[in-house]
Image (cartoon, rainbow, N blue to C red):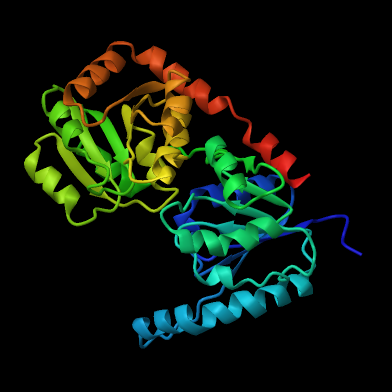
Length: 365
């Protein structure tokens, strides 16, 4: 018989915890409910160290050869671990709740066999649409179909996912909204901010790549006094470096590991959110950053796509426009600047509009 005191939950995940901030939110929520939490990850990090969170590393490391380690984990050990070890762990520990997390480029995770949970119900969160990766969709299908509940982060994705996987019910929608946000305290973040004293920070956080063009934004900000455009994230194909060299008001501060990036976000004046039109996953986006910006009352400038128009635009917490239109961006910055308290208050109200704990309660009930 299971204990009536402390319930136990197992999150089955393939990557690093810092790669997926919404998983940190789930952990925080279940901690508040008194669950004893175990998380399968590829390696442990210094994000969580407390009695109620236990990490099980699945990757094997050879100190003398990282390339050999990666090849061994990808080709052999990962497949074995998820197919055989995960069912053994579940059977041995008798978890009250098993939650499978499909995110990023999961690979070994898909070797979970159809009976990995021995007929006991499990939840399955799917964080991307993968519409440009049909092979991945095919591998997700049995995990989704055999789950007692499927969870996605955006309403349109829920309906698309139901059709693609021929599900009986529409997946639950759990937005990528954090439960709480940190105050500025980290020395390294404070040191970065010193360089921008006296400037209003327009912040872009995320992957910096050509598919999310920043040219018009850079040009518009170059024409404004008292603003700086800060790029925070990994630069692909040296795109950030090119922008910094070309535009005087653009700076790149590199990557901050979540959740430390939020401390810099807390000092942003306006947030930029932009996605390309190359996939349904982009058009029906579900970015963490709209909740991170709004949690600090930061107004946003976004491109005009459904995932942003019916969140940021509809709540008046920002302006949706063509992010290739330099004039429109220039005007939007001035509009927000001249009506800052209105946009900032609307942004904060948007954040407060969703009770994430209540949604999680409904999912796990």
